[in-house]
Amino acid sequence: WEWLHDELFDRFGGRTYGQSLYEGEWRSPTGNRIADTSRKYSVAVADVDLDSLRELLVEACLTFHQQAIYLSVAGLVEFIEAPKNA
Picture 1 (cartoon, rainbow, N blue to C red):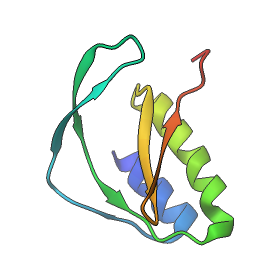
Picture 2 (picture 1 turned 120 degrees about the horizontal axis):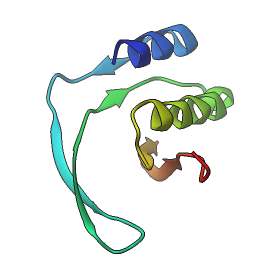
Picture 3 (picture 1 turned 180 degrees about the vertical axis):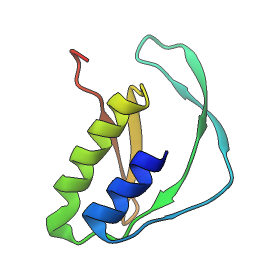
Picture 4 (picture 1 turned 45 degrees about the vertical axis):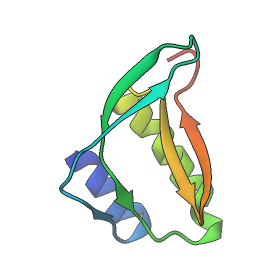
């Protein structure tokens, strides 16, 4: 987690995160129900830096062995996915 904290700070000048863990479920591409524990981060990012944030989240998918990371920008949701060959 320290890696992610450092990257968010270094690339975007700061970050906020809650100490709470979030329990949830999502439907995998195969249709299976997957339970997961998540953390929530808030980062103020200029529009011109959104692609840089997306790139960091791809790295985070690989680092934390995630298929995808949920990203919400001004209420619009997208899923940042790990590369298919990873």
